[in-house]
Image (cartoon, rainbow, N blue to C red):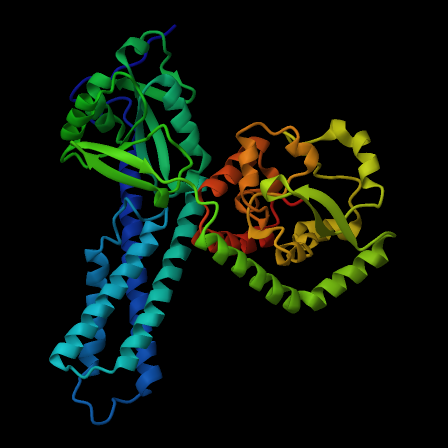
Length: 494
């Protein structure tokens, strides 16, 4: 078997084997950051202008000694300086995760607080209405603009045309392949693996590639390998040879090179708010908070669910009546379909849906079992002959699930949660999958906003368990927002 090609110390990106796309990636990164600066400037300027017009109209305020022709540009400039000071253009936070949005809001609110304090201390006399409108419009505008820019970047990354971090993965072969698979599962996150370094002892028996990832060196030449392939990030995963001393020296070697060092712990699918780092005797201990399945936040979630269900049922009543009439005219049988599902704690309940299949659909299932198009315990067919004509339309737009608002009102379901399973599915659960039953099932969830029926059983379970372990009210709002896009897209609905 061929041995891996080693990159010798002192190699540069101009030598054979170097990836010429590295300078292009860095140029794309600079262009994206510059675009954010221009976008933020436009948003802030428009917010300040709109606040001035809303507060004073198109004329200079009478009797005011404050020159707003200078105050407005100064506010815009100060706002941009605040965004820069809070590192809102740091390439380590932009493009993925919630930290970018938090920094933008924090920079804006800190500036607002500073101006308020200075105005009170020095009695500057700047209109509070003008400032309030400026910051209200500016914060909302900045967040929406960042969201739009990020979505455009994500689409470009999925196509392989957007700026991404170039990652050199370091570790044992099995852990390298696992990390590569994890990073490629979400290409929009912007971590593009360009090479791998493995232990010296494994170089000889391993070919020049691990899957489609080139092996570019061993642990003895990690900085040189990163330079040679134009990597801007070294991601270290598990390996017995990477001791604390070697990792510390690797950090020293990467200082001043512009290459970031990140560690990928063995613990996965844990959200940031549950993770706290505590330095003890120079050792960064990662403390993982236990999942929260009861308490005040759960009570708030239940109240919000039921209140939202009441409002939604009242607003959607005309639509519900139209759908019911369409089902009745399309095929014989009841309008609603009630099916026994398993909820929180393993308790069974009847879930309500608009009927989308013929009345004897369950009896026909055995004849179609061999045509199942998904793995795991679910049965899915893209062109299921049991689905009625109106049923296909309802499923495409998820309108068949609207009666589940009644289940939410009764406290049997939540607006957001894992998919409610059938009793026959639960009977075949193992210990890990059964953790889905620790929370109420939901009308929507991570599975729906991540591909719906196009997801494999394994991916669906992984997303459900991630939600169970890391749920929060903020995450619920995000999932509800993304559900609108998933429904309008119609992908994976059948």
